Structures are given as structure tokens and as C-alpha cells.
Length: 323
Image 1 (spheres, rainbow, N blue to C red):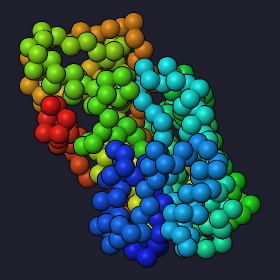
Image 2: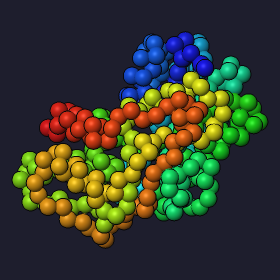
Image 3: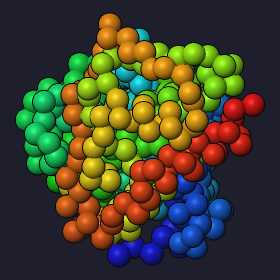
């Protein structure tokens, strides 16, 4: 097991939704802030090879990076994926490509360093058998609306596998299910389903609207993982994994979008009607993960119940963003 307290950690996406919670988990492990480098987009464009090369040199100069945890991504809900398929493929592929190759050029594999890559369940086949098992990730093409993003993330996993075989680079690859929680993206144009629904309900309640409109039919099902639990799984992967065996991170349950909407309506106190716009896509029919491998390899299991996590997220949005 790697003791992270003494490691210099490059954490991409560390100022984002998931990254904030990973930072807290690292601090809880005793990692000082001086040992965590969080590159900001205003200074470092991770899709550019020259910026990535400069980042590795500057992060802890004159020392080198010991661990890379790559969380940064360009991602959104169904609508955002439909509008930006080319950008989402390029940005996510380019970031992983440059960060992994530059880690090799920087000698990460020669210093017993590690590279942690976050994947996505969008990489699974559209009609994958439920619950999704890691060994079946190649058994079909992903759901069309988010396939470019999913394929880019899956390619990063294959790159790490190849670098393990050829160069001996130690790495890990985790596939978090749909995340939610404090500091999520609540922008209605690019957010995922839970923050979008929370914002819709709270704003409709404030305005006194008689209804909210939801995409699709409500028949699709999803699994959701509270962000603190995901952060713990990622840090555990950095501590104990040496190879990029894909590992699902999920809560091992699924809920239909219709039932999800009804639950969020209840928890937010919205009293209006729910109207379904069936001209909009449902996305992948079902998502639910087998998390046996995470329990075995990481000694990890989700701790926060779904309803409790939703309450925490709603309370956070009311306190921090609703105004």
C-alpha cells in the first residue's frame, strides 16, 4: 500500500466538483496542501502537449511528480453531449494522451510513481447486461448520445494498459457511476440529471410555477453515487492499485428517472405537475454496476444512502447557489 502523505500529487480537475472532495480525502490522509498541485485552466490547457510538459516541470520544481490523479474532463448531460460530440472526444482524449505520455517522459514509471485515471460508465455498451461488469465493457457500442466521450475515456484505459506492458508504468482505472452532491454543476444547459432536477424544482417553487418539464419518458433507469464515496474510492485506488484493471465505483442500486423525479419533487417540496417531453431522448436504457471488484481490490463500498445524499445536495444548493 502506498503512503500518500509523503507523495507529491498532481491532481487535475482538483478545483472541480469531484476534485474538491478528493482534496478533502487527501488532507484526511495527512497529505499537506503543499504536496497537492491543482492546475487551473486559465494557466494550463491540458489539451495542449506543450502546456502539459510545462506543468510537469513546474508543478513541484525542482522535484518531480510522484502521483497523477487525472479527474479533469469536459462533460455534460445528454443535451451537452449532443451539441459537442467532437469537442468532448477531442478534449478528453487529448488530455489523457498528453498527461500519460508526459508522465512517461518525466520518468514517473522509473520512480515507482502511479497514474490514476477516472473513466466513465458511458463507455459501457448501450444494451449492456445489468448489472454492468467490468469484463463486459467491450461487448458492444456505447449509447450514441455520449459515445464520443465514453470511447475517449475507454481509450485512455487502453493507453495505460499498454504503458504498463511496455514501460512498467503503475496505474489504476476507476469507472464512477453518475455522481451527485455538493459543488455539482447546476447549469441547466450542461448539468446532469440530479442537479438539473433540483434546480428546476427549487426555481419553479420560488416562481410559483404550476409544472416542470422533464426530458424523455422517465422509463430509463440510473444508478447514482454520492461524490464523497467516489472520492474515497479514487484515493483508495491511488493507494493500493498497480495496474489499470477497470474497477466500477457505484452504489449497487438503480432507480427509474420517473421515480427519481418524484423523489426530488417530494424532497424539495415542489407542488406542481411533472410534464414529460417524449421528443427528447432517454439516453442509455439502464445503468447499474456490479461493484464486487471494488470491494475485493479496494476494500471499498458506498456509505451514503441515496435519500440522505439527495437531502445533503438539496440543502447545499439552497444555501450556496439558489440565490
